[in-house]
Image (cartoon, rainbow, N blue to C red; front, top):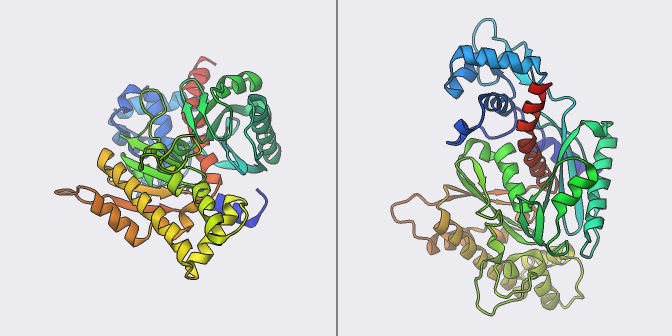
Length: 421
């Protein structure tokens, strides 16, 4: 992106001060090879001394010394002078370890309604470049989608002056029903049905292309770069062109048995209700997503339909100015929002619910009345009510989460290839 706002966002959300990735190990830690655990621990902390790694992972100092020496020989870790952020001591600081970020790149991409975005990140998770391109107003074919992805790949590589050969994987997020395991898009408002996007893009570009639901990408962004780094369990709800949800359980993204769970926007809140863009009626999304509110705004304001963003801004301005019809639309959306959040809390009992996405600047979605009604609908006897946080990220954070998907996928492969080499 070239504008000042995009640059400011990139600086604020894309450059964590001390490492990237989940800080808590989770109960699945033992299932990963110790080399991978050590590498991921160093990446999460930015820098880490050997003694701190030994304490954090509960392994002997001798094992850490042996494995880190191997990782240094492989060119994956390097020694740096100065204490790790979490291990500052008096006197001469210990030698710390950090990832070697150069030469191993990933790209994260968000396919959207109005604008596609991409970020290029190194192996340590630092953003090197970002780009945005207008999205076609109609549904895309498989070839068209691959063309859009390729244009973004070339844009960020050219901007960062990086070779294509250094690219290890691409993560792609988009709204809809996505089988993450196979990379097949079963349904999406942007693409045709049953589209094998992952397989075709991997074949075309000659590298792994991982595809997932965009709400999952936003959740990964919170887990890798946001407040979720310090939490093992939390939920993310996002309202933009649609309504999405992501869930982290035991420090891992939960997708469901067929990788297609957490479709909060398509849970039913009204029998024979409003028409959703999925073709069914009564979905939560049909009452609170931006296209649904824009549809009502055209009637309430007596205007010809235009882009959802323009209509929402006009409707919001009218509501703030006292327009009763505009306020009624927002109040009803807030009540449906409360209903959806109450269902999330009742089903999954998270300690934290993050409301995220660009539409969070419209305060009707999280007004005190909305959160109070959410609590009133929820059985909280004997429990502390779930905390709700508001994160009004912009476009880049979705692509940033997709880069985390790619980084997580290639770490084990990089270790295996480096060891054999």
